[in-house]
Length: 387
Image (cartoon, rainbow, N blue to C red; front, side, top):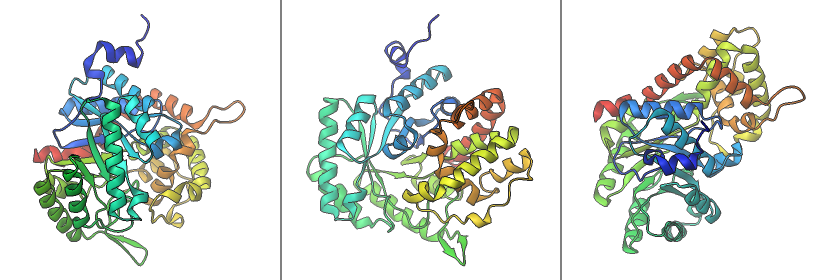
């Protein structure tokens, strides 16, 4: 029997279509590798726990790095939902949309949630932010021709903590214009760096984690969200294990937390364990591209703290990749260079890294699935306990 295309699946099985998600907590399960193996595991975990998920979540910037499209991301989620039998409604997030072209592509792909990126406008003032959001919201309504959707404003791409007063001005002004923004993603105090846990400050070259300022800000934000009727969204939420109990306690179901890049690191952990030479090859490739690829990220990476990898066996390398107890600096080098690795075309007689990783994961799929499930459950367990 010929395999059905994603479009044919959506036409025959309603549960494989993205839906508008309004009940939380909402988990954004971004997934970057084009082969989609991890997205299937995400769908299986969502089914197991009955989660509200954005099974398709990718930012326009991430798509530029991987060479994928919003349509490919949604199609991968459709296939994953079908194979997993995920009949719980799931959403598709067109994340960090900066231009009308990106917004149009997200709509055409079937996204149901739209995250408006106002990073450039924030440098000019709230007037420019409000104007862009109003324009994007009107365009979304027009393109969808009356279909339901949810929207979000991303205020997190800035070095300063978002002022609560600015959020109030934004939400109220848009409300006066008849525009309902469902979610706000602020810049929280402290550091939400890629691939590692939260920390509040750097002291003498060390990451320090004081949770009191974060907790205070989160409580004030929750009160404002309850007053004005928006959900809080947390970006760069992967592996922020020290924050999950606080977020679950303060926001409960009124939270959307986005995770993504560390699922790729879980794949590299399997590579390290079973093909140390391939892992070292990927690391050398990533290290050479790190300074270029890190430019759009806020990072405190110190590459001198990465040990020599040549003499380490697969289990030792895998331990270095373990979130929380491994080597954070090595994880960050690998994390932010994912685009370069996944688009590597290889050389004469050798396929690119993405294909080699995929083959290895397929050969060890049961182990990979178990590791991914455990990693996902570390992200959601505090929220399930508070439900």
